[in-house]
Image (cartoon, rainbow, N blue to C red; front, side, top):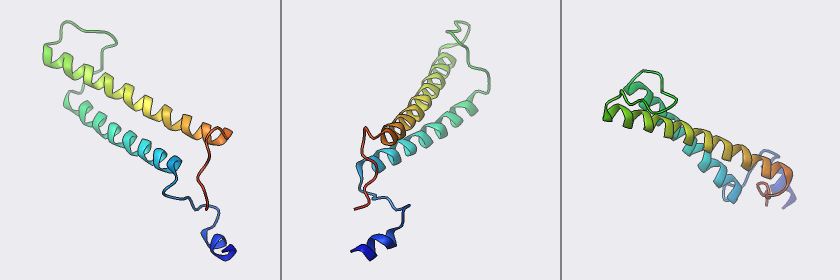
Length: 99
């Protein structure tokens, strides 16, 4: 048993650990959201207005709102990933098990 544990090494993480699963899901979601944000940005390459721009037609307003929501979601997922890592680092949540 000790020999098998030594073979794992210090970098091995249990892929069934809920913390590992949660972190992987957050990172996957962040990557998907960032890809969607890039595609949205390519649809209409113009700066996002900080507040509602009533001179835009309805479709442009929808597109700008979608871009803003996507940017906010990216920030939220990144913050959640950082928070998850902080919880593990401070011991509030168990880190990946090596059993």
